[in-house]
Amino acid sequence: MAWVGGAVYLLAVGLLIGGAPRASGTVHGIGTLLAASLLVGVLRSSPLLALSLALFGSTAVVVGVPSSAHANLSASYQGQFLSYLAVDVVLGYIVATCARRASTVAGAGSLLVQLLVIGGYSHGDNVTVNLLIALLAMAAACMVGLLSRERREHAVALRSQEVSEAVIAERLRIARELHDMVAHSIGIIAIQAGAASQVIRTRPVEAGEALRAIEATSRQTLSGLRRTLVALRQADPGAATARGPAALTPSPGLADIERLAAATADAGVHVDVRRTGEERPLPADIDLSAFRIVQEALTNVIRHAGTGRCQVLIEYGDEELCVEVVDDGRGATENGSGHGFGLVGMQERVALLYGDLSAGPRPEGGFRVRARLPLPDPVRVPVEAR
Image: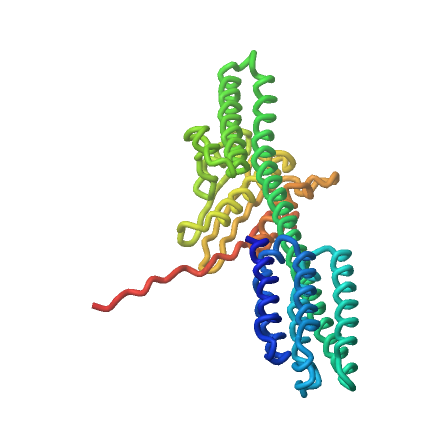
């Protein structure tokens, strides 16, 4: 279809020149400008060829207009030169879409042809004016093309930056999930394994309980890892269903705090869970983040606090959710255990939800982690009057 459009364009130019010999140069110029719309297909597939056809057609109109049309024309810018506006439009498209080298060649060729033809076929004192108008029209077309190119390149750069930031954010999210999930479970497994190895001969019943706790914790960790892998493979429609119900296990939340407390108790740290305020369903991201913050804080208590008790407080406020984990252990140790990847992950989670996190030793001894997470405004459904 592009070649057909080019052929029809040349035919239309020939008809304009030969079919209307007495028409003014303005009519010929406007007719050629309208006929240039037939070059759209060629312009998309071969921009330089479209420019060559437009230059040929416009020049043919300028050269082929009868001398009577030139003599009877009183305007300072002779009408047949209007056909070069089509050349300028094609040139602007080339500048906007093609390589800079091709744009330079196209601009230089178009400028040379227009200067020679307009300079040679202008009459009297109109030469300077006609050349100036042609140069301004070409400069305007090139400027529009450059602005379009810069705008497109800027949009591409923004999209590339957004994709890069999204990839980095997803990597950080996965790193937080894996750290919070695996670190807690491995800490419990290590403590239970150490306890079982010490009493396996003298107290086999307690050793058996420790081994069962290790098994349960391992299964829970495996389920969480499988859920994370399924989330990473969501691009495959059959990935989730291929792994059965275990892959569809929902993400943990504050409803699982008691189960987390029981696992922590098996590791030797009794957890006192207290809830205040009106308990209600929470957005999934806030619910998961609150659970992970408590989980990581309990992991630090098991590893570093050196105490057998701690307290978890969950406050459901009207505008925010507060979770707090307090122990009466050693607090932050000298080797910096109170400032590891766990606290970094908690800070990142809270920052993503526009909340606030405070973590540090208490004056009376021990360590406190407190996170405040803003809650979205509840959706109010209007009640219709009866």
